[in-house]
Length: 251
Image (cartoon, rainbow, N blue to C red; front, side, top):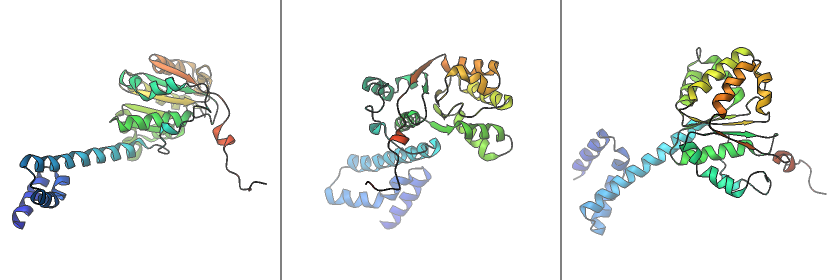
């Protein structure tokens, strides 16, 4: 019997159902002790295989997304962000805009929750099976400039282009030269029509031309980002300043 089990597990691994192979003997013992039917026995094995594959796929998507942290939108405090209603947040979490190929442009001063909201929506998307990439604008510029000379940058850029949702954090935080702006336009042009994009920025679109160093490039980028988009203005005081930790104890 042991020899038969060993051969069976080998065949299962050959057929790429190795997760079920790992629990074969345990399920056989359970089947014998509980008098499981053939259908029940097979269902337990296949269900475990499917479950483990889904778990591994989720782990892989989370790793590839490269979120700065995994914070659920359940922790997003609408009492602190009055410019977004409960209904609006619920609609965003439903991800209909992602299914329809819409972009989101999150504008507002530093610390009002733009990155939290963007990453939280990205996390929701990953858990629903979408491929997501999160990257800061500074890192993206570096990736774009080095894609031809480093394998790491080339791999990351391919992952970004293949994503269903691309999140670009701190767009226009730093000024770009004409070459960098052109590389960024080429990326946005590739994503246009095939991926949804979330951008966060503390600068309004009217200021992007100056920061890109070329008004024509800025107009072309805006044209593609805003064509099918929702612009969300967040305001209020900075969470980071309001809830900063102190090295001094309370008096």
